[in-house]
Structure formats: C-alpha cells, structure tokens
Amino acid sequence: MGTQAQRTEQWADVTPDAARRLLTAAVEAFAERGYHATTTRDIAGRAGMSPAALYIHYRTKEELLYRISGVGHRLALGILRRAHDGPGSPAERLADAVRRFVRWHAEHHTTARVVQYELGALGEEHHAEIVALRRETDAAVRAIIEEGVAAGDFDVPDVRGTSLAVLSLCVDVARWFSVDGRRTPEEVGDLYAGLVLRMVGHGNGVRAAGA
Image 1 (cartoon, rainbow, N blue to C red):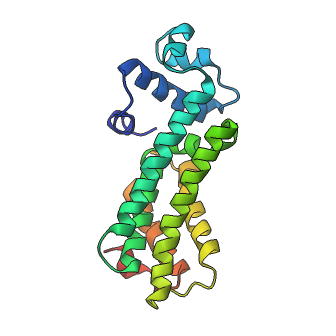
Image 2: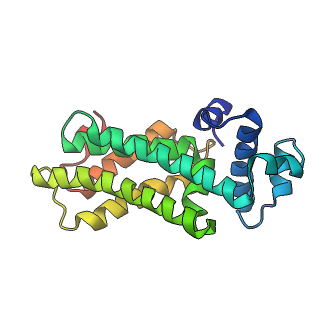
C-alpha cells in the first residue's frame, strides 16, 4: 500500500486531520473490498472513528470517492504536464512522462486502483468532472507524441490510439504491482519507458529511457 510517508504526502492538502484519516481509510477499504461492498461503517472503523463522525466531514460515501478521484487524477495529470513542459527532445520527455507516471502508479498502487477502476461509481456530475481530467491527461501524452511525429523522431500512424495504449499500459501497473515483487517502482518505470519508446518507433527505446 506504499509507505506511511507516501500515503500522508498525497493527502497533505486534506484538512483537518480527521478528514485525512477518513480519506486514507476509504482508499484502503475501496481497494480491498471495492466501492459497492464498502460501508461507511467500514471506513469509520478503519479510521478509529464512529460512523456519525464521518458525516461531519463527508456527506456521502460517494463524496469520499469523488475526493479521492479528484486528488489522484490531478496528481497524475501534474506529472504528465511537467514532463511535457520540461526540457529535452520529444523522446526524452515521453520517457520521463512514462517513467514518472508509472512510478506514481506503483508507489501509490492502492490509491491508483481506486482512482482508475472505481470511476463508474461516481455520480453523474462528479463523473463528468473526473472524465474531463482524464481527457486532459490523454491530451498531455498525445501532445508529446504529436511533437515527436512532427520532428520525425516517432513513427506513429495513429497518434490518438497510441496515446490511449500508452496510458492503458501505465495505469495497469496499479492493478498488479506489489511491494513484494521482483521490481522496484523505479525499475518498472525504466522498463515501461523503454517499451513505450519502442511503441512509438524511436530506435530501440534504450537511450532516452535510460537518460
């Protein structure tokens, strides 16, 4: 589930402490049991609080999921935007984007599973807001690939489809990553950066991935 420091860092802007504890408890419960099988009593119990105390900070269970989804998607989007706006060639920036995006999904795999796979449980308005963030995420990756194609660095006949494939590959890390596995988040990030560069037809994908 990531270290305590990592779990705290991603919710640093959530105040007061009780609201943060409830959010962390909800992440763990949703990831373990699924959104629909989790009750507000489950969440409050994990946070060491009464069910009544939960409603002081969150009106509904869905509001908790919405808050988790919003924080997670904005953190992930920020990673990709910084890579897009960073220095280097399109290949170097794409490798950096993938490396950092994958690392986040590995280090925060519990949160990421909830963020990526419980989207359908959101209410209509909240769902539309999160989908808009996902479109921006796709646009950030697509922009780097388009720049690489324009520069002659990438050979990609279908940029939109390739962008979707890249994101799907990276996001899936949250589903299978385990801290007890053979690879660290950094190693998985490096591996995927090389794979993605080969997907876009950039040499053998090794040089920029290891830069």
